[in-house]
Image 1 (cartoon, rainbow, N blue to C red):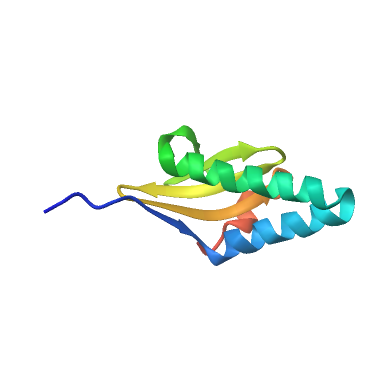
Image 2: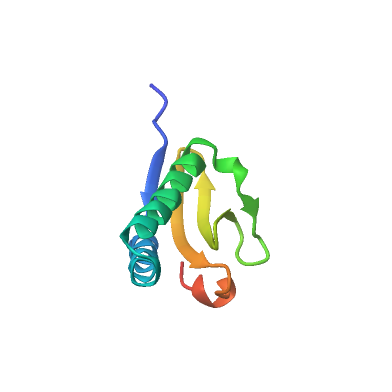
Length: 103
């Protein structure tokens, strides 16, 4: 049986997080910076997909979670063989214990 291709899953909450970051950036700094920062976030997600072990383990927050810093945000994800799930994209000032509950 052929090996399965890895799967990238971006949760609805993570997509919503990126949309909120975009809206805030647009309001504060304009379209060009908002587009650029959102692109950085998505690019980093794809880097994590290609290199899932780059992120730091965050077992103190929740078992099996990893995070990767992009600008002022952390991309929170879980890596399993053949699957990476992007859980949330949180500002570095947000408390992960509170904002990652129920995942």
